[in-house]
Image (cartoon, rainbow, N blue to C red):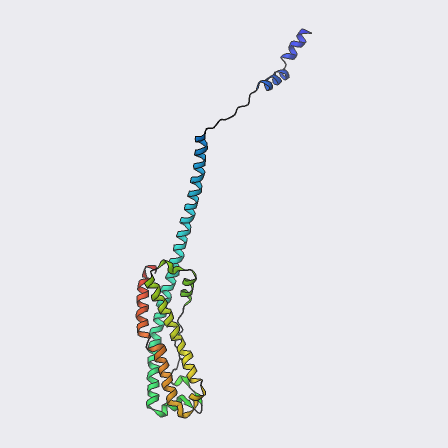
Length: 225
């Protein structure tokens, strides 16, 4: 009986149960410095992520601004070329009008029996070109002008306002020629003078200064080419 009792006490099951009863749980004690260090690490990670995100967004914004201003400069170059051609064309139209005013037989070819033949004076229409403003509109929508100086912005605004005024030449000349009074033979000379005056007021007289402004704006935006 005693041997059996001893065997039971030293059996693996008994030893295992005894070990479980004697096992102690271990707790890690951390001081405030460790908590502070972890907190600072988290804060640093968040600040760094925000900084990098802002930096990337700024670089992307600057790239977009440069691209829009480069497109605007290209548009100005193209518009300047078209306005040079149009200015030359309008001068030739004015010569034709002066010839009609000095030559009644030639003038009668322009308006005869109530019919207008515009091609006699302006073979390619009232306007030779329509200047673009697509890049200008995109630049305004993207507020890229916050990145340039006020003088340049004012110059660009003036250029595109003058482009719009030149475009109005077509409407103003049309108002004269589509009026029933201009179709009367007695009013032929008056109609020609009104057409000439509208060309001067809306297109020809403003063209030389506009061309200079184109050149100035193109030069100011040269760093974006």
